[in-house]
Amino acid sequence: MPTTYHLTLEAKPQADDPDGVRRVRMALKKLLRSFGLKCVRVEPAVHQRPEHEAERPETTTNSPAGER
Image 1 (spheres, rainbow, N blue to C red):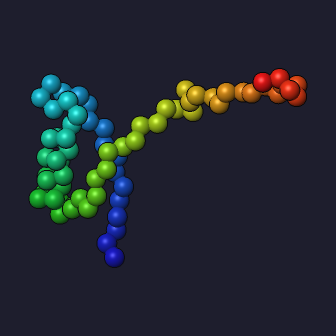
Image 2: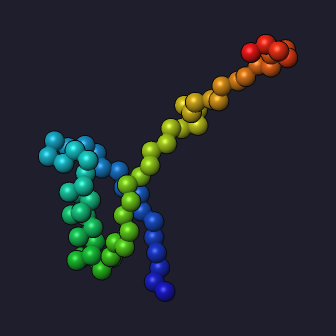
Image 3: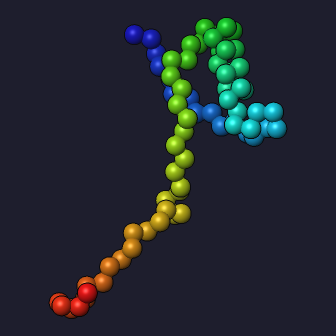
């Protein structure tokens, strides 16, 4: 079984390629043609907020019975 690597790329915005798709495709093509490294899976990253910015769950207070 061949060795598998996980690679994370960040495309800086450019006027002609704002999301970086064209540059990622060119890079993958270059990796295959020049180095024999074939991309077998590409997924867009799911951006998550850092823990310190995450919303905290609302706290609930217990009210006396009968009050709602």
